[in-house]
Image 1 (cartoon, rainbow, N blue to C red):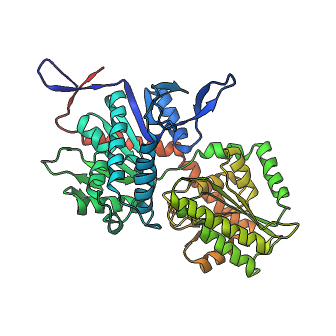
Image 2: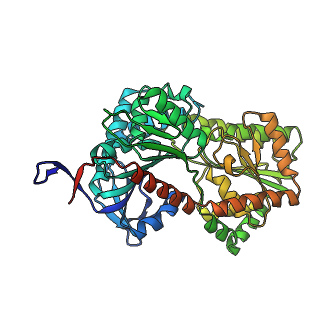
Image 3: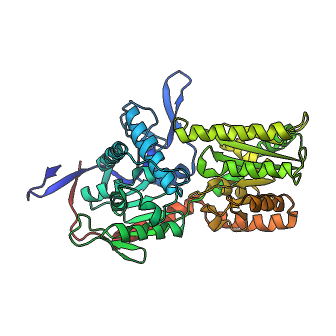
Amino acid sequence: MNTDRSGSATIETGQYDFVVVANRLPVDRVTNEDGSSGFRRAPGGLVTALHPIMSASSGAWVGWHGAVDETLEDFDNDGIHLVPVALSEADVELYYEGFSNSTLWPLYHDVIVPPEYHRTWWDAYKAINQRFADATLRVAAPGATVWVHDYQLQLVPRILRMARPDLKIGFFNHIPFPSMSLFAQLPWRTQILEGLAGADLVGFQRKDDADNFMNCLQNFTDYSIQGFEATPPFEHDTQNICTAAPHPISIDTSEVARLARDPQIIARAAQIRHELGNPKTVMLGVDRLDYTKGIRHRLKAYGELLSDQALQAGEVCLIQVASPSRENVGRYMQLRNQVELMVGQITGQHDTISHTTLRYLHHSYPLREMIALYLAADVLLVTALRDGMNLVAKEYVASHQDGRGVLVLSEFTGAADQLNDAVLVNPHDIAGMKRKIIAAVTMDEAEQSERMQRMIQHLEHNDVQHWSRHFLDDLNKLAETHRPTSPTKVSEV
């Protein structure tokens, strides 16, 4: 910090007009042909949505580069300035695996498993959020737009606001936000809420999530609430008005549709069905191996349908892709054991020499292979117990430009709000889910086409680029309308 000629405090600033802050940088580490280490752009909807904006403007991305106990200097990759935040092995254990994924994740997903509350985890979460904020403050230009992402960084907006009132600050919560009765458990509920309220705009996947956030602010802080606007008391150390709003994320619809028309991918889809013995019906589940995804409920319903002979071995096959997730966390190790036991029971009871009823794949796959799997599947089963959005459901729909296929979708996903021509299910109701699966398997082609075309039309008008533009347009309008009256003086470095 410096002082100007009048003696007023000034804050050093960087040169980047648009800064994204997320737990991870948008790159993967690779080994080059000469044996050296480098980085390449990572796949993913967030990167796809923001890359054109960042390339067209002066953009920087703050995040962890994925390796522990390693400090890297800032570097440029594919037109984006990357600002690595170093994390030690202890940081990952306490901040990421601990507070983020063993406290906040289960709390925000309806306490499907009990959250754990440890002060050492909270202390690490505060320290790492400060570290991300410090890196952001170093590179953000005067009046820059800063977009912070997800539950790992909920304290960052307030830290930025207190240091730099000139910034336009947005936050997007990619996962659900819990009801007031559940959020009340969190010992640090006020600090989290005030951390988020430092943003001009807090975006959520669903209106219910925005409602929950506002109810929590009203009951656990001294903010005044009017509709979806929260105003701090006069004596508060941040004076911005915070607005909450639903901004459901989407996919790169045109890119998924383009890949679905690729002759090589179409041929690969046919090969997948052939390798399964060309069953009459191929069903598909695609999930991270996470207890929120309802994989056990899905397998239970499927196993019972085979036992009831409502589905016949030899005529049906379920492909279950369960990509590895948080394998060092105890709950996830337990889940993997449970899922693999159920898989063994179903295949042992129902497989024959010539046909498999269940193909379990504990791998991650590139997008091209995923599109082939979507094309090969007659029915996609999305049975999440709680999910912020679920982009797999949207990718499946966008892949089926021919109108073929049926989406079976949990009511408890954000996607259910937009894809209401799916066959909606309550995954806790196993009997009801079995009936809906049979309805999907036996649905005639005309109804399939009508439902699918309406959902495709929605995705074409509401793709991931529309999501990012809409959020940033709203953020700019709100920040200008609610600009603090006495901004801190800033000076460029």
